[in-house]
Amino acid sequence: MFDIIGICALVLALWGLQKFYNRAVIKSVLRNLPGPSNPSFIVGNLKQLWNADAFPFHQEIADMGSAVKVHGFFGDEQLYLTDPRALHHVLVKDQEIFEVSANNLEISRLLWGNGLVASLGEQHRRQRKMLNPLFSPAHLRTLVPVFITIAEQLRDALTRHISGSDNEIDVLEWCSKAALEYIGIGGLGYSFETLKEGANNAYSNSAKNLLPAVFPIAPLSILLPYITAVISPDFGRKLVDVLPFPTLRNVKNIVDMIDETSRMIYEQRKQTILRGDGEEYDQVANGKDIMTTLLRANLASDEKDRLPDDQMFGQMNLLIFAAYDTTSSALARILHLLSDNQSVQDELRHEIKEMHIQLGDVTPSYDQLNSLPLLDSVIRETLRLYAPVPFVLRTACKDVVIPLRTPTIGIDGTIIHDLPIRKNQGIFVGITMANRNSAIWGPDAAEWKPHRWLKPLPHSVTDARIPGVYSNQLTFIGGSRACIGFKFSELEMKAVLYMLMHNFKFEPSKSEIIWKFGTVMAPSVKGSPEESTPRLPMKITVI
Image (cartoon, rainbow, N blue to C red):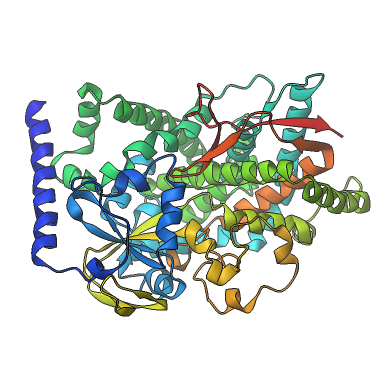
């Protein structure tokens, strides 16, 4: 065991020496960019960038300009970008140069398998080509009745839970339960039964705890490519069990629980399709969920186009987590904002009630859900101002020059119009801060104003050509690695709000709620003994 620890220590030391050499010998063009001071040669600004209270620091960086220098391990200079033109090159025009970092790919493989986010190049293109039709509006239209049914189940569960009680309800818990059931039924054709009375689903608990468990150790993932090069996955798992690192052991146990359940669901569904008969097959054959449709398409594909089992399984795990934490976080944030803005909540409820009156007991269609202007605006504005994922990372795989839309002033006073980027340069894509850029969105950029979407956006927004796939914002990023399921998530939120606004009134908690920075933003009660535990208490009244 100690030999392995020694190897890991040696890997870390050699990596640090390499970074120190690069900094000492190769003069980085980033050295002339503005940026925060470096508080530690060993960890740089990483503790400030990666902690639950990091939001003010990210805002401080954004205030320094649209291209800012920050420091990683051993003085490694990294780039924090919010400039839309530079980001267009990183995410779209030169996207094959700016790859997901090796450590991010490795941690994705360890957590979720060989799915879309853990692949590059041709493998990524093949996987995305097969998945794209499953997230098209045409396919999502077929899921609307299922989405409304789950929203009704959530309504009924909340009604049972709050009946005769003045106690506050943890809205985040119910948003998480609903999100898992949405991706379970709509994504996998499998019910996790999270909305049933008395449900205590081990998978749900594990899924909820995974990303909060990973976030504190995320900066150390930079060592993963070096560690996995000398240690096999099987041996690494055994090593985690004996090393004195409870955080790593906790992550491993959560991943094991999720992996076991996911494999069971996948194998059951695959074998049912291969058998080709029986009542269960008839149900699966008519299934509209994404995984069943993908399985049928994959099994019917030519051998050269068929995805192997490990990649199919990776898609399944990715489906769950891409749609679970981010959507539940966004939905909880919307309800929190509506509780603090009763006039907007009342106006939204009126809009939704009008459609309920018009339709009666008829389930709204895809087009009808998308025809509610204020509902659409509330979701767009919340996703703009409070992106569930605050930033992503990229690494340059060769030297390149990218232009800036807004020139920045260097430390020596020179005006910088272009950024020469060296191979292996690390880049923070500042999603939240780009979405709050006052030069683009105006002086009220940091304010929640859903009504801004009910009129034409200012030219400063449309002229910026923000490289995102969704509504002139970076929330779901852009290019070939944009979030493939953003329309699924948007439809889910609309179905839930359509049902909840019609039946309940949401009021703020007596406790102060703060939102913690993380892999995905999460709420908690300030000053409570469980402040580190994500929670969003709120008063809910049946109307």
